[in-house]
Image (cartoon, rainbow, N blue to C red; front, side, top):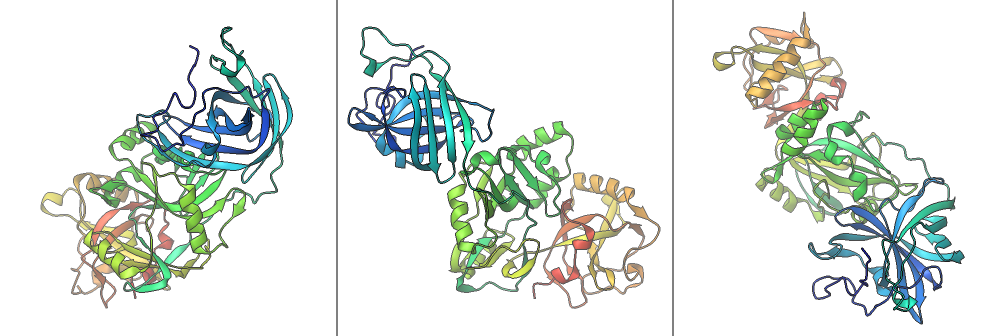
Length: 508
């Protein structure tokens, strides 16, 4: 059906924040006089698409001649993308970025993907060749009409009525400068601190209780664990994370979390971590959806950012991400660590992170420029055995016997007997049976140790190979090196046993 409407016809300017206009016709891109500027909008409407807008003249009035390009301008030669010629937009629209209310025409988030100047190299009926000189895109492109434009013979050409006006966009020459390679980055790690503090030289963030993940966002999304394991297929709802980035390429550091009652729940996330069956993953993505919480930006549009100061990376991160149900940027505050720690404790969150302003990102290193300050302590520990269960647990186990590594080897640090449900008991029992071993893996035999103030003597132990890693919560580490009141939170598939260090247990 022919589209008779102009920019003004389609919009209610008492509702939408878009600039008002008196545009009542659409110019012919093959004949109109070109201007100088261009803008590309990234439009998160019902479906994500990109809007290319070239400044041209309608008489003496500059307008933005526009094409909706679902996949954006092509990044490779020989791969044309559909471009639908849509209504002209007012010149003022070139600076528009914001939210079009739901229910309005084009409702959704609009961001400026690129802007700059352009030069027409060839112009004819149904054909346009131009060079872009933008912040992100530099190069020569062709636009060629593939469907015939139709006009009511009773109307002048300036008010042409158009059927669906399809064009194809081609890349002729990519003139962007040489780019740094898009290489995955091993995450930077935080050191432990005993208490919160106020300091205007530090930025403070909530500590999220999830799975650490580096997100490599290009035309696709790749999620990598701390150990560089590909987790993309496990969290299918994050597979189009790249769509929420206002960028050609970006690498983010963040945490995958599952929310429950407004706070992250590692126990809830545990039901997702070890899934491999595609059907189970699809069901779990609906019953236990996850969100990627981004807190750092390591690469953007051809340039590594790891040497940039923290506050610059943070600024670029906030400009990059279009928040949605699948991705958010972690909140932060400068200077007021005690207030944030108090809020984290009131909301029963795990704690906070303190990050030194001006500091670079140090891939794969544990640094005192990042400090973790916990309200409830947690630890990643190695399962070395289990003790017999009693009563309702007689068919499974009573407690997990756990340890952490120091210079002498795997050090026994206690028995974890709480935090399990029927599902985790059954799953763990299968895994424990698969890893049974003839002898204890600890430096000392836990059966011969005297019971401490926060632990009972170990009786009836069955040993396992020290390969399974569990996360536990605890109140403190005693002077004797035992966990006080430990509670099981889940298994970790993204961390090896040798990464579980005794030195990481104490906040002091």
